[in-house]
Image (cartoon, rainbow, N blue to C red; front, side):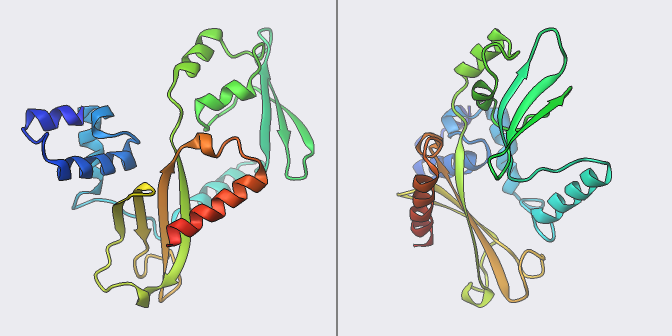
Length: 233
């Protein structure tokens, strides 16, 4: 692990260095130095170093999203926004998946397909695929043994660039007693992420997903507002 490397190099007592590494690794590997493999940790720690370092697409990730969407629609795809998959099932005698989807108006839509690309955490499959729905028992057991996925709350804001110091960095990471690791990204002038004279500010913090996933819509909204106030303060 990265923590083992600290011991091998005689730096295990340097608390400031250990705190710095824990913060950096939490951002990139979602684990601390004692839980991040040495080779992987050494790789991700280079992401913020010059001469390449962190960078943004001109126009933000929205540009990439728009290009992907346009290509998808151009090639005959049908894009559904605000829909929620509630069930995925497959029988052993068929290569066709049966999918139940609820749209934004709570209408049930039934779909059939031969292939699915699933981008959510694999733990989500346990609730979507019933016992008899085609998920192999051995794979279900492996998913049950996986650690719970990490979660994050992201704050999006805008401010006048005149309110920022002249030498303001574009990326800031700090340790906060309330949030732990707090990562802040600020747009640069002329990077097309904000109008002239303005800057976008994105702050993200890691959270325990168990405190969010089981909330009803009203409780979720209240918790979201309270956390936003903490971040702004």
